[in-house]
Length: 405
Image (cartoon, rainbow, N blue to C red; front, side, top):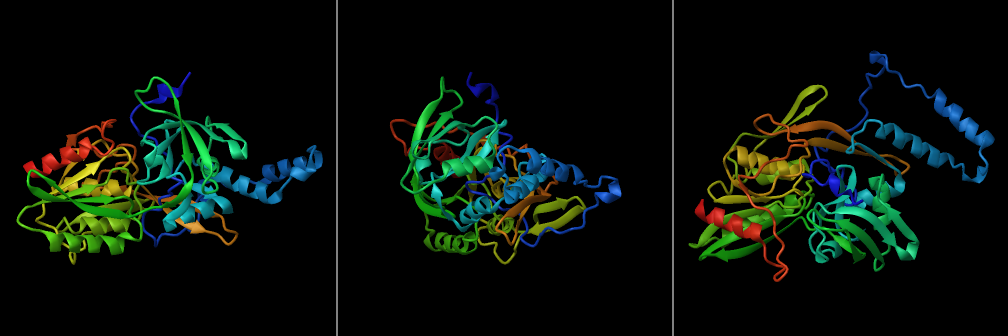
C-alpha cells in the first residue's frame, strides 16, 4: 500500500542535505563544557570497546572491519540518539557535499530533501533545475530511487538523508529515476532526471504590470552570502526605476529554505523602521536580539506583499513572520514550513563535520514557530495550469492584494 496515509500537512521536514541550510549566528561554535557529569549521566564507552573486540575476534570476514568506518558510525549513532533531525554528523564525503551546496554550485537534480512524517520528501525544487523543469513539487514523497548505471534500485523506507543524497547525486549527464507520490494523486509515478551542474541563485527581480501598475517581483531563492551584495543592488534598482505607475513590491519567499539569519535581518531592515526582528534563545536562556539596521530603511513607504508556501523555511519564515507582526506586509499563499531552530557548523581536520542545534528562534512577539509555521493573511493554494505552465495563480492573487492594499 502506498504511504498516502502519511499525507497530512507538512510539519516534520528534516534538515536539508541537498541544499544544506546553515543558519544562525556564525559566531556560535561548539566546545562548551558538557554538564552531563553534573547530572549523573556520564558516558560509558566500555560496552562499545567490548563489542568491537568481539567483532575483531569472531566476525567471519575480517577484511570488512574498517576502524575508520566504525569510528564514523559510532559518532553518527551518538549524534542521532538526540532524535533531532537538524543535528547531524557528516563523514568527510557527505560534509564535502554539504559545503559544495553552501558555495552555491553542485552536481545533482536540484531538490532539497526533508521528511514528511518520516517519509523522504521533496522540500524544495530549485528554480531552473532538472527537477523544477520536470514538474517536481514541494511535498512530493520520494518512494524509490533508481539509477541503472550504478545498479541502484532502492526503496526509501527508513532511509537516512545522507544516504538519499549520495544516491540521488551522481555524475553530471547521468540519469536518476525517482518514484514520487503526490497528495491527491491516485498512484505513484516515475520521474527521470538528468543530473546537471546546479547553480543556486540568491535572488532575481523583474518588473510585472497589472492594471496599469508596475510592481517589482523579487524572488528570494536563498539567504546566502550573495544576498549581502545582491539585495542592496536590487533595492537601488527599484528606487531608481520607480515611476508614476509604481505599485509596490511582491517579495516572493516561496520554496526559500532559509540560510543565514543576518541576511534575513538585512532584508527586513529596508521595510521595518525599528525594533527586534528575531531573538535567539539557547539552553542558557534568552540570547542575542537581532534588531533592525536603521542605516537601511530604504523602502519604508513602499507597499509590500509577501508570497509564502510550505517550502518557506527557517530564515525566510523569520522574515515573513516579522513583516506580518509589524503590520508591514500581508502574507499570501500557504502556511510556511515551521523550522524555528538554529544550527551552527563545525568542520574537523579529517574533513568530517557536525551541524548542531544551538538555539531556537523567537519572532518579535516571542513566539517560536518550530513545527507550527506562519499562517498567511490571504490563503491561496497553488494550482498548476497544464495549459500554461508559466501561469501562477498565487502571484496573481498577490498582485491583487498589493493593488487593493
